[in-house]
Image 1: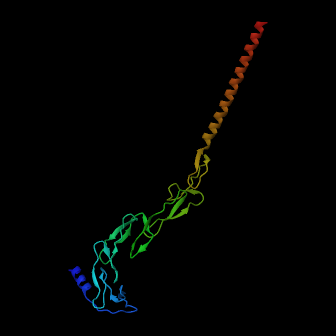
Image 2 (image 1 turned 180 degrees about the vertical axis):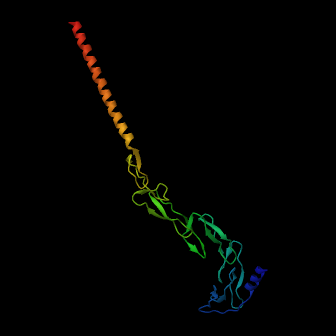
Image 3 (image 1 turned 90 degrees about the horizontal axis):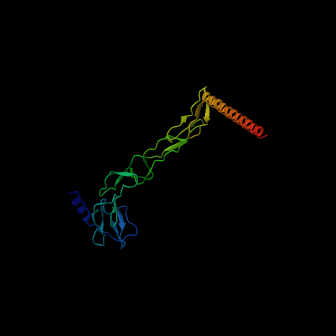
Length: 224
């Protein structure tokens, strides 16, 4: 019913005559006439002449016009898939597809209450924290971890571990790794054991050399 009414409106003949400048709802034909525009949802199928008005017809499926026009064809409907978008409202003869932004993306090109292009949210690097999470309209905002803290995943910064009185720092912390503590007693014992081992080896070497010297001396006596 609506389509039939639109066609009838488009077929109404409006007499026109050549003019140097056309009105707000007119367009200049190929022959220089000021022709009445077609309503939105329609396009020009025949321009007006000196005796006949503009002939309009509805936009084919998958196309649209969203304002009065003098176009020979309708515009193609936008596609949302593949640009970080989803179809929020389908295309109609009088309006383009309205695209929304997928989770994890933000709109780079807002358009007609929707979006025509979106980009994936940035991820903060290790050594940084997420100051402001990304939204549908803005990218993630990152910030470096303050001194004395670190971040492995780029989400939150964690304070370095404080070694206890019985521990010492085995490895210093960085912006991407924590302090590594080790037991001072264990280190002391390890040092003590190392010293004992060295002394034992030295003593064994001295004993071996002494035995070897005695053996050589006994051999010389027997030879004489």
